[in-house]
Structure formats: structure tokens, C-alpha cells
Image (cartoon, rainbow, N blue to C red; front, side, top):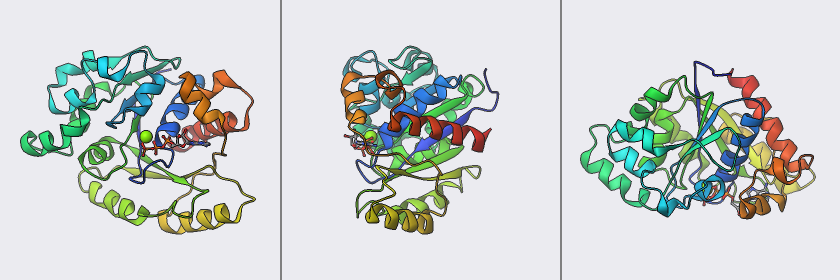
Length: 261
Ligand SMILES: Nc1ncnc2c1ncn2[C@@H]1O[C@H](COP(=O)(O)OP(=O)(O)OP(=O)(O)O)[C@@H](O)[C@H]1O
Ligand SMILES: [Mg+2]
């Protein structure tokens, strides 16, 4: 079923390696498995989401989010790839070219943080969900994602004592973005590699609730299946349908649907 009001969810945190890409990939596949039409936009020069779900290597893709951001809206039709390794999930690839996109936007764009937003306008109504994988920085690429989004999820690495480092900067950044995108809603922090029995996880959970203000009820456990899925370029639901980590992402998709629809 196609939903007229497309939900655009940025998965953002400038802390590296906290689980942004993993969240985008498996949330996308679970939303699609629940019957939603989904588009993933990769805004990270590392292109990890594209390497996981793309049928081509990002370096071989002619039109990626980099060209789209600095180019004409007409590029959208060539940037949009319908088929991926995930059923019912489309992709706009990321690529190393994104490394120079921020400078190009600063030099040439009339509104450097609103280029993505203006380019996604024509896609509204065509997808139920658009998920944006952000790079580990708070610069223009992430600002473009947040300015284009209706919602934001902040993955936090629960098993690490440094999991919350810098998160207040991100919260402050959201307030600034709301000046151009007042509808941006924080869905909450998403605890990744979370284990309720571990003290460090309990402490991070309490602190995340304080510092972020909102917590998603679903938490994601640690599992070697996550790396396996990336290596095999598969969704968790193909690897082991009833594994704990797969069910966690399925629950996350259900929780998000019930929050935003
Ligand atoms: N629940 C999990 N269990 C085990 N490993 C995980 C889990 N989630 C993520 N990982 C692993 O942690 C590493 C970082 O995850 P991921 O790439 O999703 O983070 P990221 O925030 O996108 O990183 P970057 O900031 O570099 O873009 C990856 O090797 C990933 O496979
Ligand atoms: Mg990533």
C-alpha cells in the first residue's frame, strides 16, 4: 500500500560506528517485509549501506547522492535504483564523491542545507518510507538529511562507556535544523548492542533518556549475525528469521509504524 504522506527518517549520530548503517539496512528490510514501499538514501562517503544492499559496486554507479545533491532534480530518475538485495527496497547510492559535496554545496547552492529536501519533493507519495543513512559528522551532509526528514532516530552504542559522547551537540544541532524544518520529530535514541543485564548498558540507558529525552522501546542486542549479514549482503530475515537480533529489528519497524502512521 502506498501512503500519501511519505515518512522520511534520518538515522543520525556523528559518533562513528554506533550502528547507523546497520539500523538503516535492517529497518528498511523489515518495513518492506511488513508491506511498506521503502527507499534508502546513502549520504555517507563510506557507502556502507550501498555496499550491503546495492546490486552494483558504488564506484561503478554513475549517478549517486553526490551528483544528485549538487546537480539538477532531473538526475533523480537515473539516481534511483529500484532493485537491491532487499525485497521491495530501492536505493540512491552513496559514493566517495560525497567527500567533496559539502564544499561544492557551500560554494554553489543558494541554500546549502536544503538541497536534498528540494530534490525529494517529487518522491513524496511514491514511497511509504525513505530512510537516510548519515555519515559520522554533523556537517552539511547530515544537515541536508535532517532538513529533508520528518523524523530522526539516534542510534547509541549501549555497550560502550563512550556511547553518549557528543550527543548533546547533536540535540543542539536538531534545534538549529528545526528553524528550516519545524516538522522534524525526534523518534528517540535507539540502544544498539544493548544487554539489560550489563551495568554499563543500564547506565547508558538512563543517561540516554536524560540527554536525548526520548528512548525507543525496542533495543537491539549484540549479535555476530549483523556482520555476517553485511558480508553476505543479505537482510537478517534471510539469514535466520527467528534470531533475537532479527526479531528486534522487526519490533523496531512495528514500533516506528505505530508511532508515525
Ligand atoms: N547489534 C549489533 N551486534 C553486533 N555488531 C553490530 C551490531 N550493530 C552494528 N554492529 C557492527 O558494528 C560496526 C558499526 O556498525 P555500523 O556500520 O552500522 O555503524 P555506523 O554508525 O553506520 O558507522 P559509521 O559512523 O562509520 O557510518 C559494524 O561492524 C557492524 O557490523
Ligand atoms: Mg555507517
